[in-house]
Amino acid sequence: MLLSNDNINNSWRVSKDLVYHFLGIGGVAMGNTAIDLKRAGFTVTGSDSGIYSPMKEMLAEAGIAASTPFAPENLPGDGFIIVGNAISRDNMELEEVLNRRMAYTSLSEFLRWGILQSRKNLVVAGTHGKTTTTALLAHLMQTAGMMPGYMIGGAPLDFPTGFSSQGNEWFVIEGDEYDTAFFDKRPKFLHYLPYGLIINNIEYDHSDIYHNVEQILDGFRKLMRIIPQNGVIMANHNDRRVMTIVEEARCPVVTFGMGDGADFTWEFRPKRLIISKKGNLWGECEFKLPGRHNFQNAVGAAALMDYLGLERAAILQGMASFRGVHRRLEYKGENRGVIIYDDFAHHPTAVDASIRAVKETHPGRRVWAVFQPRSNTSVTNVFQKEWAAAFRQADVIVLADLYRKEKIPPERRLNRELLKIQLEHRGREVHLWNDAEQILREIVNKLKTNELVLVMSNADFSGLAGKILDALGK
Image 1 (cartoon, rainbow, N blue to C red):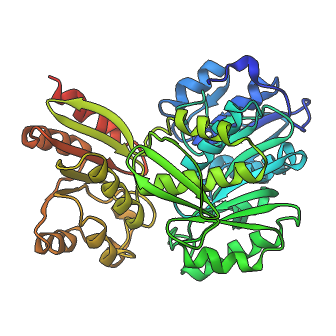
Image 2: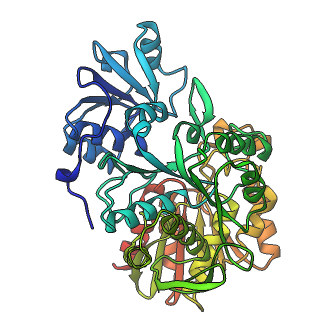
Image 3: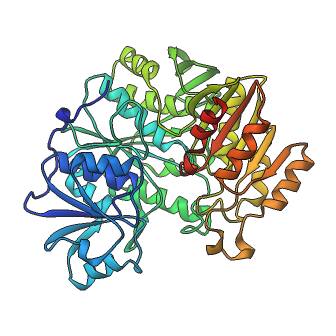
């Protein structure tokens, strides 16, 4: 069920006397929050270095004056500044905010006091699966008539935007472990006042801010300390680090996972979700999303909804109707017998899971894995050894050039040439094509009937997946 703008209920606990200026408004979370605030009747402006589709059009439709590039004159005469996570001290607009001693805060803290303080917040945390699981939770509650507010770090297919302040009891939010702002290096999720928490998994990532996995675990330990006794945690039973972390919890812990030992378990059958509770069949339904990792996400969400008292039939109905999130293993279509998927994967574990998912969903097809190393970690050699294993299930691998590689010292860069050699030793066909334009030109002439292309990047990669699909249709 889609929400219309008329459904948005003003639940913001902030003054209408101020102008709210979003410094970095082009980001998904920043832009969607600004849009909701504007639709609730507040005065909103914003700025960024560049604002691109679809956020550019979304902001314009909402009537928000968004300026580019950053400049001191973009600032309101007297306003409250929400500073985006990507903004650093070399930003000229931020420097003007500080020089003028304007009131400012991070988006996470703005949400804490503006909305979350008065809600029962369901937080989804972990290295992988946060966006999909958050969107699924919001969808389950929405279809059951619970009208939750939500912040989803992507573009959900079942809602018009990734943010809504609707309702007055529940709020579903993606709990990112990345740092909060230039002045606040705590994980974002520490601001979100969790009542219910799902921890999908914990792995090393974000090498630009964390030196090792122990530093990430420290953030999760702090998260354990702020969950109330009358709250609840859903913990992935198959993840050793998660199970160690939740030993420190002072609230009930419910486990979910594959295999014996968890409170909620599941069986894998493509497009069919079968869930058991305490060893007994709990329910089953159609489930559209491909991949074992998405089934795991779904069972964690089902376990939380069951704990909160949502009727089993309503949960299963919501599971069956959930369509997912743009660029999270998104099926783009088929042309000339070639299937195209677009995906956000940028960590070895996620890449491996996505390739496995399309292989299991489309058995017998030759899989092309097209990967853009773009995240702050994937462009470095932190996972140099792990990448060879991550691509092992693909038949053909295309590695784009590193994003902004000039900003990375040569000795710290991912070595594409070495990775190519390692993969070729495993019998894989590997191409080093530099950018989306070259990949499109080369791949269209090589693709054959009954093949599959999986495009993976933490950005839209110039819309490459859609362009390949369109080119095959010509």
